[in-house]
Length: 577
Image (cartoon, rainbow, N blue to C red; front, side, top):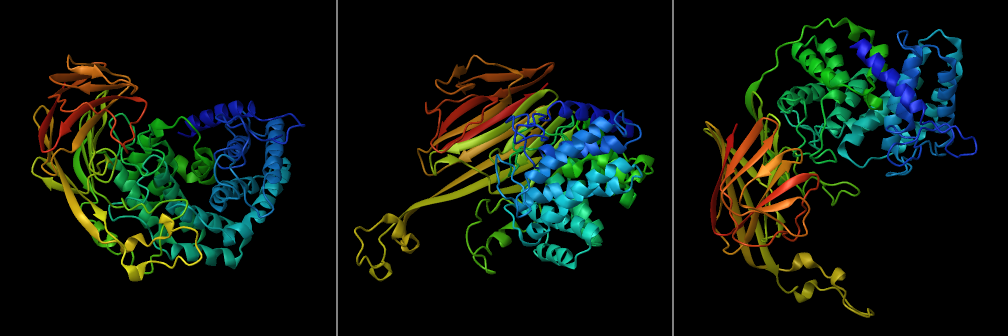
């Protein structure tokens, strides 16, 4: 693996050097162009991550750039760019998102601290000026790391790791104490290993590696326990082709293609730390997917050079399961936690983020050979199915009751399958009692936004209960949808198929003004990709409304819409090749 990573890091070094801005008249001189915006940014997915790859190449004796003076000069210019773009408060701004951002700065701190540790271990004197630039950058960040806040749950562990990294280098007790203030909030992970953001493609890897570093630098070995939990959970969340399950993510990896590659370094470190054969096997699986040196905190080349024991491959990998049925979070008492909102000093909305009340919602995973199934609650899709190359990316349910997407609240495991249920209420709101009305003295009007709407009594409340029975059959799967009341609710099932395959059915009718969408009016539908296929029955078309208000229809896939009206009792069968 060391040779593979060396080759990848060298290729990436060469490509990124070609994107470095060398026009001395440019304010971005020394930075590396972002491939999306064409602008050089000083953040962990921008110039900083390229500099880490260059530093690793310079000190790797197997790299073609080892002790390359031209690359060293480029690295110095890149660090000069980072210092120029560091604000007076010590932070950096990615430019396309957060500004004067402590968490984005913390990502850079962790990566640069690792760079500094690696460079200071070298005896090659020309590295010293660059090491001093990195040390200066890090020292300037200390005030922001001691005082700065976060947006998202994982940002807390990024800041904790950054504080630990700075504590390792500068030894200031205030850094350790500030890290303790973040850690006293407790770990936002379920006993089955799921983090708040349910982000298997991106933010799991962030929380895991950051807590590994924090455990090391703060001498807090207990911080490795949540890392173990999440790494173990992930063996159930990989499709047979190595793609990670992102069908229910609460972040931007939702529905996108990710592999285990960014888990590689953490799996490898934990395999060696725990002498764990399962982690070694998962590291091997992740390593097969690696085509990139890794994001800054997960930079694999830096990892190998900082932790030489990783080259030893001392732990023999175990066999990973190729068949399982697993409900993640089945025993997690999520309802009890949700009932406490408003208690314990909870004070209102989460600004610039969200509450993530879907935390701990159950997800069922089934793997059998080349067939991979997910059954999901609190997600925009309730079912997904991969059968070889044939991909049913999601099954969505929408209705005019609320209106918009219907998400499943509960999952019950049954012999041979599962039952999903969603219960929603919708009513009307009466007059505000006179003694609760605000004074309008001196006001030119009575604005709606100044009225105490929480005082209005609920009237004419209606309840919609939708159930979906999902059962496995010898030749595939069956989905049974029921919703008995209220009557005359316009409902639709949206089937999302991979764009690479082909759909065939005499009952398909293109939907006007909706890209890539068809009504499935009747009969059997076949979706094929390569030699793999799935056959679905039975189409239905009880109303002509294609787009339900409040519903978002994803791009980049083929959408097949079944339209229904309550009361409904509808069964869809899926037969597999």
